[in-house]
Image 1 (cartoon, rainbow, N blue to C red):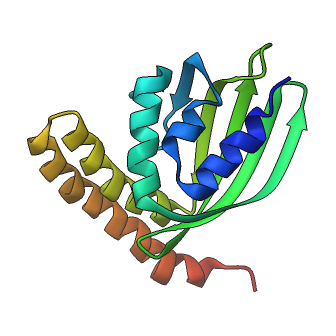
Image 2: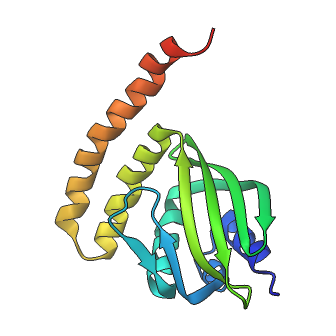
Length: 161
């Protein structure tokens, strides 16, 4: 069995997309935490996403790891433009020990919507869609504004007492 998970963790904490790709099976898939509309497939697509993500997400620090068989759950904390973010990653490993599937989960909601408004335009530009890169922050910004307002002003009123 390879040292895939330590390689993946170290690459995330150092922001090294090329090193992260070495932990992936050539057929690996990454399931987006933002939308069910697409997944990233293979080294090229996932590597491109990781380059953009590592340029957007700061100070990744893995805090926990849980494993059962060939499934590993990793948890980290980081920031996106100063906004705290927490991510859970479910990694599925193939028989060769390489990662075959990554499913990402992000909280809290304002962190996810903030990530969408920063990551989305960079991905659109990378895919030669400059018009879409201009639209995403507007549409995502509305959603982020609602999520952030709810987080700061509405949900505190409903907290346990």
